[in-house]
Image (tube, rainbow, N blue to C red; front, top):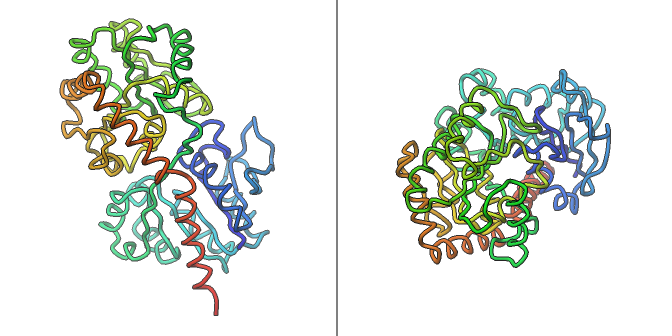
Length: 383
């Protein structure tokens, strides 16, 4: 079949500036192109040409100004069997008009059906038009169905994934040299325990909570280091008011709390492989942060908060702990210190996470579940 993938207007494909959706598309394309003719529409970027190929797919990049309209116009000049739209339910109606014969899939990575994102009328129109709704967590699927019960029968939950080959597990012999290299770059003791946090710097991500938690960690492990990878937005380091507040919070810890700013996606795996524990301290009902899969790929035990869909890939799976007191830095710090102390348990959790990625949370499985949906739509479309 001829299938068009349409990501959001925020970041380009491939994910030279990061972005969960862009990383997702980059990961699944090599598997999809084995069976289908894939075209990806993407926003332009100074580092990328107007057109290129990626994993056997054609990538067409269009200006970000009026991006939605630019894609709609491009669709009118092409012909597809399936349109797979990411995170933009408000675009569905116009894309359906541009490709009246195509089957429609909407993939959700965020809560885009909230009242402040889309009107009830437009949401209903979208849900009537799409053939399938795919969400990255059961939490997100339930959130949509709570507002629009008619969505439930069209919804499939497909957990995201990661390429395990990009991440050296922390016990790999080369991981030690990566840690030494990173320690020289950032100026910390390579023998000190390392806690890692990765994500955009935002109050809802709880970055301030993880910094405050280090006071409790340092009571038992005074040399422990916290590395925070991320910036206000993807693609560049930018210190807004909240970022400056975080730098102020980190200052008393000296080199034991390090904010790196933006790190190019290709370099991020090195940070995971150089850590001992991964901590996600979301304060909001997060759909499901993909950093959990990345931490698992590197064999890191995970501490996450009971917010949104995040517990779905940790609780009961043996790869980490879920913290109920998500906004209490003392509780979070206590659990971090306990996991640093219980090294055998931490190692068992990390190995469980790595196994989960190798067997389940990888791009081949994600693509396989999408291919099954494509096949269903193809079958439904036959007379």
